[in-house]
Image (cartoon, rainbow, N blue to C red):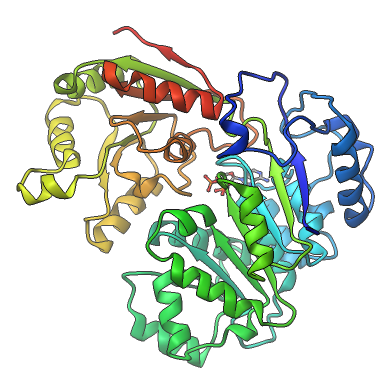
Length: 474
Ligand SMILES: Nc1ncnc2c1ncn2[C@@H]1O[C@H](COP(=O)(O)OP(=O)(O)OP(=O)(O)O)[C@@H](O)[C@H]1O
């Protein structure tokens, strides 16, 4: 296989590793060898040869060395992007506050700029969005009137967020947003309006959910062969947990026949990634020399997250949550609640989210605004909740897993798993909604409310994701 692995750990210690780990969710291709920061520093030459050298180093080095997120000697984002990304984008990027690269940006951008397909595999909150957006801005030609980049996302909420970041970067100045050619084509939108817009004045960048995108392609509203770069964000979710996997595969297959194409996949979790890379090559979804850029391979969870649990009876969870909110006084928090089962729906029960909202509205006396986000709400109410959050002020967001993927609310200091997530991957993504300020060393809390029977499930998540969870006594 011609694909390569860029394996970039940044850890001082090597905590307990379950045997399962290396063969399942977050395994590295070569788990016993890692290359160190100092070795990498010595290898800063042209990106292509660097990748090949890194591969060679990975086969010989067994050194593990601590590395902070950014090294003092590291290049700035501007230096990495100079000559590839237009000046006005670089200027905006710095105005917004993106000056130094995160690990994934530093490692992936030089490779992306060579035109190679990439799998961006790095912790939650590590800056994958900016990584692929900078690639896109390096490729699009504003003079061309066609869709040149497509970003596929699993949810409307994530689509709105990515669109906002892309538009922020594309705006030539804060008051001139006309330069923006980014369209959000998301489930629940008014497709008729988008159809005319796509035909009359195609945007350079299209951010789309799968169903809406496929609809436009099937109706020949725009052609995939004008697209230079296709990004699939939260790729493992789209492949393994959504009903749309068939459409995603079809999309990738039609893109595979385009000339001059570049494909990028991104996620903080890519289960069985060796198989995934193999499939990508076999199915021609990527070119044969696809690069798997794997940052923090031995530590899938951000170190700034502190994990805790409180053991309680199911019937007492509301009171325990209230006590935690009072004792911890989060600045902003997301409270994750399990989806209502079909059986419970049929029985006419209220969903747990509704019951919890009612409880908090009557019992919580703090100053945070209580908001709800769940799949059963209509699109306008969902958008209203997120808009309200983004207007500032502290929030307590009660949500199902709909907020677990990709949503970026950097003010979140606490995650409460009111119900334990169903899978280890869900744990990783829920927890990763906190600790999203790349250069901050502020600690954030992930608190789990569990019954005694659930302790072993949490223990399994601890083993697989390599964190330890401290018991809290109230
Ligand atoms: N170079 C940078 N400097 C400062 N902040 C950055 C930089 N790059 C990204 N960020 C910020 O980091 C936060 C997380 O970025 P982003 O949403 O891209 O994470 P992600 O890797 O896509 O996470 P997830 O896997 O959870 O989707 C955002 O608030 C973003 O603005």
